[in-house]
Image (cartoon, rainbow, N blue to C red):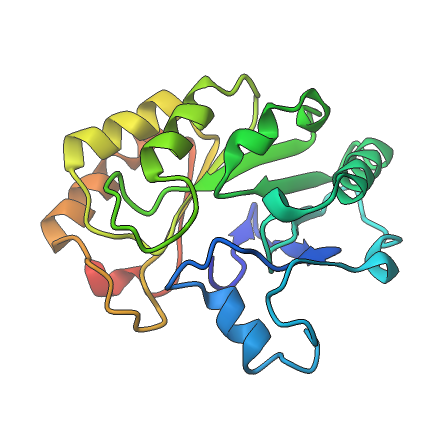
Amino acid sequence: MTRMFSFEGRRMSTWNLFTGCNFNCTYCWARKLAEGKLKKSYPNGFIPTTHPDRFGKRFKPDDFVFVSSMGDIAFAPSMVEDHIIATADKYPETKFLLCSKDPGVFRQVKFHLPNIYLGTTLETNRNYRLTKAPPPFERYKVMRDLSHPHKFLSIEPLMDFDLLTFVSWIEYIKPEIIEIGADNYHNNLPEPTPDKVNILRSNRLQLCPTVIEKKGLERLK
């Protein structure tokens, strides 16, 4: 995802106790930052890295925290996963978002705490082979079958899709929150027509109780 979004009137915060990813998405904004503008803060670039000095962060009851926004916890060691769970258990009134392009990691029972949101990215239903992550259909199946009260879906960067199929996927996943955004980093991705985008948007209330449209989406509308 690009810039953090607001939820219930507050900007989502981040907790990057683990960073990096090996999925090598060609359009990854986080990798570009870690290897470019923020290189001083990320001496390992986007190589999966654990940051023990960040483990002790404290949280407020009304915080909504995106865990490892600068990476994918599918590559995190078990000690990182265990610390995330222990922290979520310690702060039961704080919301924590875990988002992975390999949502199969969420099959582990330990992730199923009531204050944790489990999510994945579905930019499209098509497999454009722009990433080493599991293809969209595999991500969809896992999220569809995941028994958890709080599911999150990132549709960013939105790529061209098959309308009926994509809408049905979202309906079956039953996300509590959808975040949708465009390619804001000029990656020349295959993008949908304005008609498709607007039909998808017109169905948003039926698809999900909370739909957050990111800045830049208006270009596709």
